[in-house]
Image (cartoon, rainbow, N blue to C red; front, side, top):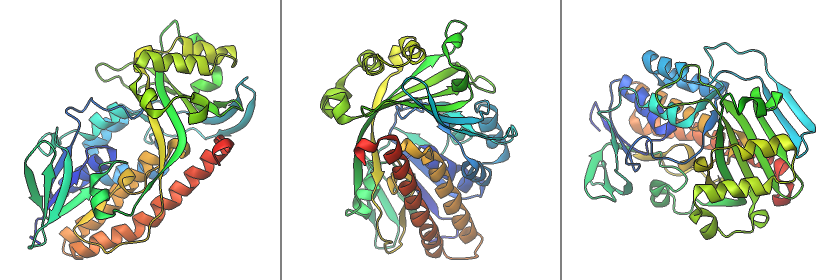
Length: 383
């Protein structure tokens, strides 16, 4: 391997971009290949919780100017996580001390992604889907793109999410569990007209409301510290239900237009507390889309090599723990630290990959287990 290896990253999501920032700032040659045609094309969610581990990872990965952009466009900090019956009787509440604005507690996914792209225009290549790889006789890694063409580097990092093509080739025995739950994301723009509709607690953080039929709804405000162009404050709204409760096949659900998904959310909460009904009635119909809740199955360590995995590509995280992005950021920070240590000649690159995997695997799957425990509490019908 050369003194200045080229590192290929498949996937320009949050973990892949954080890793690219750290490696490029450390002087390494990086190329990121992302299947989305532009930074804006991605339906994965809206508001993301950032915990202390995520904050520490961001400080490790991001140059000061990029961290400043991310911090300035984050959400105003909240202080509450709470659970309620569908008639808004509180069953659990956790409050948190006032957090310094130096810490981030929530971000808008797309705004966060744009912040992580700061300064990376020369190394992130959109519209390139890594479909396969080959380790050459010289030990380098050649990747192939669905759209045609190839590239070659010394290391390949699969940060390409739950459907990872890199994982399928590297670890064909690794499987992902379908939890039997579907989430319909949406949001309500906060305006002078809709602000009074939001219950007091819903202003303060993440609030979960559930009935006994296998249906729950999550609400959380996204109020920007500063508003990048095209952004508005909003209340994230999610409906999560068992497939039996929705009574729709995946083919039917995922073929529905946003307005029909909004109607499903309205109908699913039709006999809930009036405040909840009002929120869904005033939500923005065009913002609704579905996702499947999945979790990675724990696997044994494998023989380390020039290809490794990061984030949901290896330990797919259900959103029930609110830690998926944070775990991917931790992966990026751990891997960057090991690779930059190798770049300084303090260890070999193969040792760096092995050291990363020794930390990443147990940490990631332990976190998956905790998220599954939370899912069982939120949806006992699926346990």
